[in-house]
Image 1: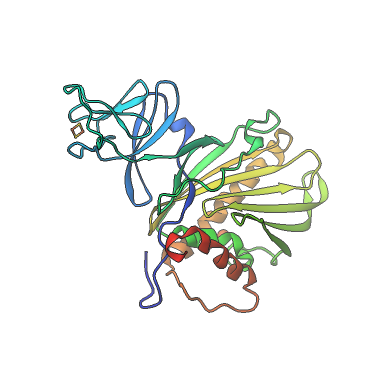
Image 2 (image 1 turned 135 degrees about the vertical axis):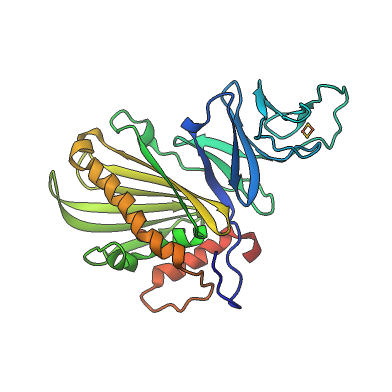
Length: 317
Ligand code: FES
Ligand SMILES: [Fe+2]
């Protein structure tokens, strides 16, 4: 990431839940090499179907577990000398030695599978999860379409991507919106969550309605955009933004709409959201991170958001 000289450090890797894979991309018995949180990782799905995530390098001589490693039952076997690790990272067998040294282990990451994605908990100081990945009931509801997905990797710190959500003015300049819609912002008591709601009267394929655009955010990684207002109809975009390292970010998006809206507005919604992101990319990839920006009075959301995000960085504690 481009840095501003002598103006404070760019943010480090934040703490929280971050998607590291789509569920559909990891079948039982599969092993994949990943890079997130500025670390090499190996993810695998056990024969019984559980996703597991480990630090990549074997405790023995340091082979990369995802470069030739294979799933054996509920464990992963190192490609070099066959040591086997369970999902917690403990070595459970050395095929040519009866005694497994107590230090024979690698770090096992906390993971949870939800909303068609596999999430890992990252904390710079190794603290356990302090909040949960929210469940999107729409993804399992038969009245909603099968989610469509897309991925995006951008050379930007994820803080810059996340700030976009709290920057109503940029919608006008980057995305060509008519005017900045009036919004209400609400921070949850436990501090990990906030919601922005904007309302506007709109002509829709189903008539004129007061439409509600609701944006919710959990930590720095997870957010939703929900459009409601038409009775028994709705649109949902769920996204997870994950730090590859402090200069690169991987975003995953999943879209679903009620089946009665699929033909009329579903494609428009998906196209609108994905085109919107394309418009942001040029800004993101070429900006610097200002740790002490000059804010004006109307940048209220941005200043609030910056303050709120400090809780997710261990080095700003
Ligand atoms: S390096 Fe993994 S078993 Fe030897
Ligand atoms: Fe944007």
